[in-house]
Image 1 (tube, rainbow, N blue to C red):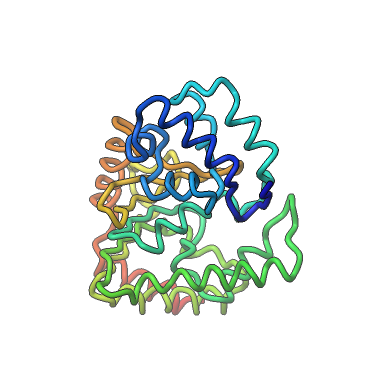
Image 2 (spheres, helix red, strand yellow):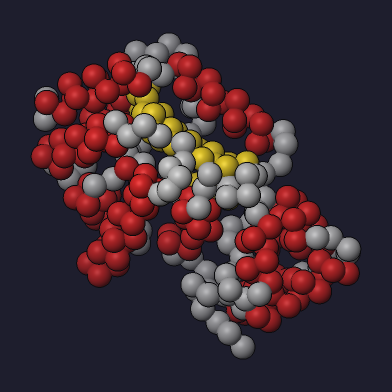
Length: 270
């Protein structure tokens, strides 16, 4: 028996494949039903990756497994841990054809400097992270910025709340360095960064942050994360609603040029 929080299980994968093939469903079709990519389903079946988020529950319902998948999953996989919530998302982000992010509480992870990222993880409580775990997460977070230098470079856009630009996580100097880093990234020709100003009287993003991405195989997904975990949205009408919401957010936000001027102004005030 293979058991790990970071690896898959050949036992679970074989059972998943059995139920999928019994119903005559392809890996791609199952992926569409549970909000994951075909490649993710294949990796779970090969035992290379554990099922994340709502994968098990949705696969149970879709394949009519009558609890068998959940029983094996509970035996094979460790539960909990913030890193496990986002592992599947990070795999998709690493190879995404395009990425679009709305964030309201803090600077998105893929834009964070080392000092800012460390401050974010240091703020974590319930559970509080030890020093070794914080450093591991900081290294992992900084590695995400390879996104900007990939060839060919993917189209990337961000909509950031003005409040996120003024919250001094880590202190004023850390915030200033973070804002200047955002300005540097915004100058890349494949990146657009927009700011949602405080004085907007209408706002399309009141339900919270979201991430939209086009996968390497050009499938569109949304990713939403909360306190107890994250999940992909790949089915209509929910996916279309989030895509429309993000488009409205971009229309409501300052344009990239005005956003850069505002970010520079806030940086000089620190």
